[in-house]
Image 1 (tube, helix red, strand yellow):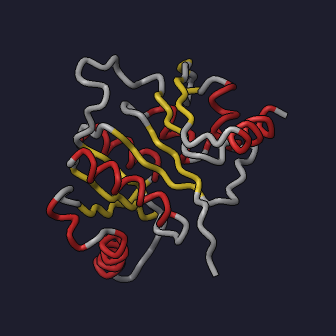
Image 2 (cartoon, one colour; image 1 turned 180 degrees about the vertical axis):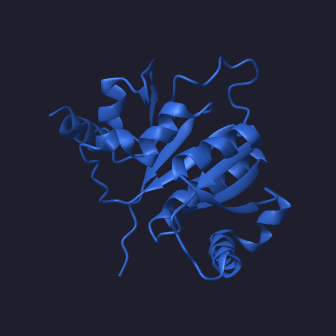
Length: 201
């Protein structure tokens, strides 16, 4: 299978990053990635930088990154991915936003308390001196995760989205309805997906 070949090639050649451009066709309800890009996202064990069909032609320095969005579900697995977001922000002196989307159907008795708890978890991920070099912002919102991420990117004019994936993440046949697929397909900026490699006790 192509997915297995991608994993083998990555391991044998010590690949640290895969960069792929995607083409898309506008369907009735969603955008479709090319089949090769989809297979790479499914099978890659190293970070993948995807430039989707809605990313405009670069008119400035292609290395210019000023605003980074790290979208997190606040699971333990994203601690590896956030290190990439922080590294980019530190190197580029870029503004970093950590975004968590609460499920639309969550019926918490105290929304403010839940949001405060989520913000506390966000702050735990960021070193105390980060305010000096990336001015971190912590955003908690509610709704459909993929749509809220895309809405925020449009409002914030983000230059890069960073998404973390669990190390054992297996995309099902419903991949095209998932958050990762929707964000990569619809984002107006590149998306860096990072599969977790840390071991947890």
